Length: 185
Ligand code: AMP
Image (cartoon, rainbow, N blue to C red; front, top):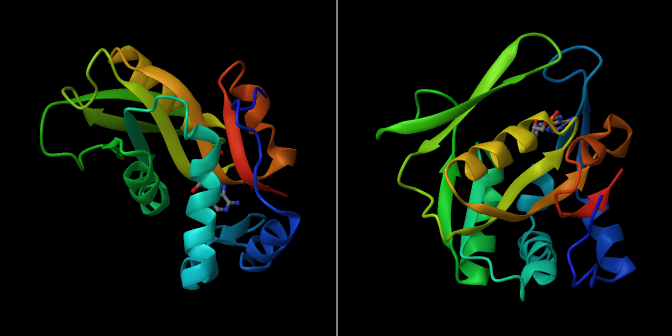
């Protein structure tokens, strides 16, 4: 995993507080999956504010022009990150949700496949894009989103996650892309 130049500029205290604000939900959405529920963190104003600030800091000098949020929990974090960076927002959505002409990328899941789409005019060729999602698990979703941005002519400056589930190997799958994750389990 390559890290952004500004590194991790948040205190151990804050990391501990944010970790404590996450909730593990066993066997959701199916048996064997432990779902990392971020709603307790979002539900505490100070934790929400500090988590967004911690996701912004490493990218402050990266020349980000666009922040792309991945549906749906990615939107919650990507919009305030975009505002803080003075960047535009690009929604990356599941198929059939966006109203205008779309480009899409299909990707494999453990069982079956899925697809992400964006509007064909959402990403100018000069765009320097930061991708944001809540959780990096196997990396399939983030890799598909990065591929989509690059096919539309944007440069992926990096990827920002609230939380990485390290055992699932997502960072390795993302290869040379620059990644920052505020929290890790
Ligand atoms: P992946 O493509 O495997 O990296 O999965 C990442 C996407 O699935 C993100 O958009 C997450 O919101 C969601 N996700 C995957 N696993 C979990 C989990 N254990 N808890 C919460 N969200 C998850």
